Image 1 (cartoon, rainbow, N blue to C red):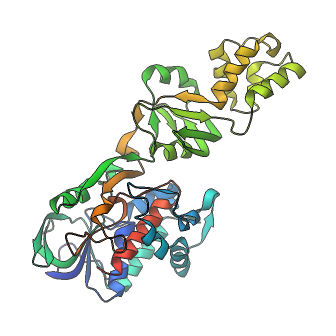
Image 2: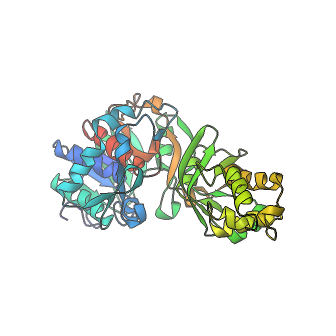
Image 3: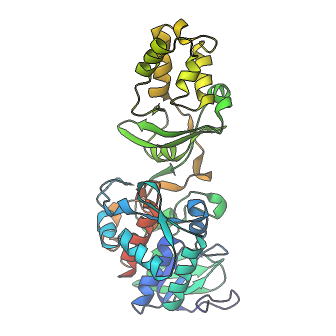
Length: 408
């Protein structure tokens, strides 16, 4: 597309807006600023724009969630109200309209999640086309090696050579999640440079891990899914699928609760939500006394899991008639209220997002501009706003990028 400069060409000296980061938030911001007639340059260190978009949603891009229109839930932040302004002004219906305008077919899965029918690449191409149409210049394999205040604007030394300057600088480089794709703490370094506090960061939407002894006992369950499971951390719970892995637990319910879990705490898992397993086992004991306990359990949980639970309780070789109620109660407890203490998570390597980030106290909620440094904006994952799994983080990216693009 004509808006992308060949790497051998020198960047123009001055722009109205420079956006660092060609991801979801950065490209949205660039499009909106460009449509206002602003001269916009987007820089990204990657070889291609929108790489996280491309791999998202199993390659189909879960580009929003209909429930993000009601953001009272679905987002974590030290100041949960901060996100309301942007999310109320750019809503799921707005990104849906943009997707449809580009002829991209989509479908709704469970819990309000919207996916492309075909490829996530369509969303990347959508924004490349929109940037091209808005006159935005895109320079890839380039980042800022230094940023300095230059009067009322900013001057950047860039790794492809030379310097560029701008009146407005937008930081859209995301967080630390998935470092193999080039994720770094760049945004936090810029925030620190200009005096914006950063809320401590940690991996979020990430699988949880167990200690070696427990992993060895659960080894037969690797690859077994429980759907649904109710997974709780403190007062927060999620009812979605859970997966046993060779490192611990994964699946949507675990990824969701990982944003609320902290080291040293336990999680509680109900693998048959809504079912009183003890009552069911008692009824089976009365009506089918020769039934094996694991067979009765397999009506509610996967067979391999039922077998392991019966073996752990020492009743796998018995009939229900031979099992005292205390043993049945322990089996039921293991299903309805399994309490386990993870030792950690798989970290940023597999985390879908970063929890924490640039403190919202430093930013204007309508514009995403840093209060003490006019002209400097932080958007998307770089900010201390983290969404639930299932399109919430993309909606925050679109909304925060759109908000900054109206004024930068």
